[in-house]
Each structure stands twice: as C-alpha cells, then as structure tokens.
Image (cartoon, rainbow, N blue to C red; front, side, top):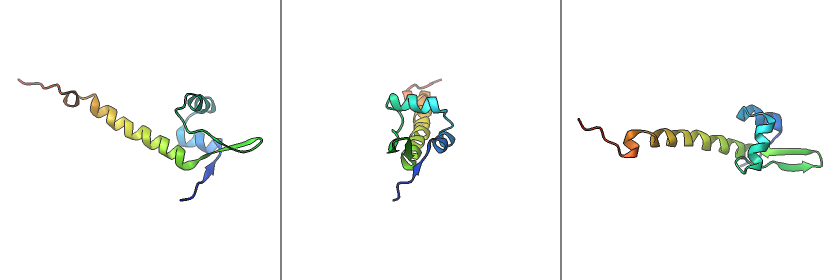
Length: 78
C-alpha cells in the first residue's frame, strides 16, 4: 500500500471542512495530525483522512440504529 500525502486544499475538499475546523479537530485529537515535510510544508496521509471519513459514515449508521425504539428495547404492544 502506498502512503499518498495530500496537502491542505485536498483535505479541505475531501472533508468539506474549512482550515480552522481541521486544525481545531486536530487540537482536540479528533482528526489525523499532519506530517511535517519541511520547514514550511505539511501534508496528511490520504488513507488516514479517508479512514476518518469512513468512521464518520459508519458511526452515522450505528447512531441511527441505536436511536430506534427497537434498538432501545422498547416494544409497542397493543
């Protein structure tokens, strides 16, 4: 597997997040950290950004199923 490095504009495109949101999430430990490439250059592993998005997609399904009455064990006997 290759470790493709992407720059901030591509990360912003993939996530639809603005620069501020990306760095806030990094600071909160909720988004992959960038890799320092040179003194004034950083990038992200594309696979880590994709994994982050995949996790968000999967958690949406988990949350939607746990919020149903059936998932909560609530029955509606008539």
